[in-house]
Image 1: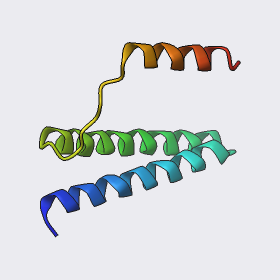
Image 2: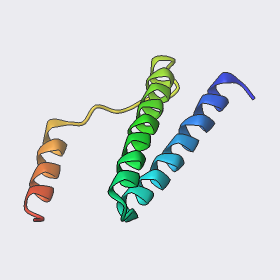
Image 3: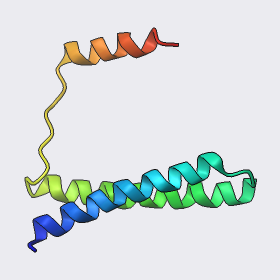
Image 4: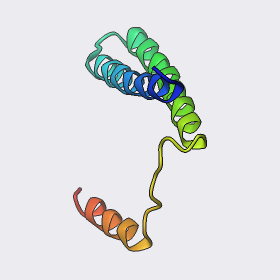
Length: 82
């Protein structure tokens, strides 16, 4: 397994872990424990961002810039949803 595959696997794992901690925080009744889960969730998001930026800097995770009209359409769609 090369660097690209290892980092990609790590990024996928971080996405799964973040989702799990998010569910725990959402369903936690104890405020102190919920706070702990939210702190851990932030740490996991930070790790995920580091992996994403590393892949992006190496050209392994390309993102397409959003067109202004797409941004406007999304804004309109979600601002009228509530």
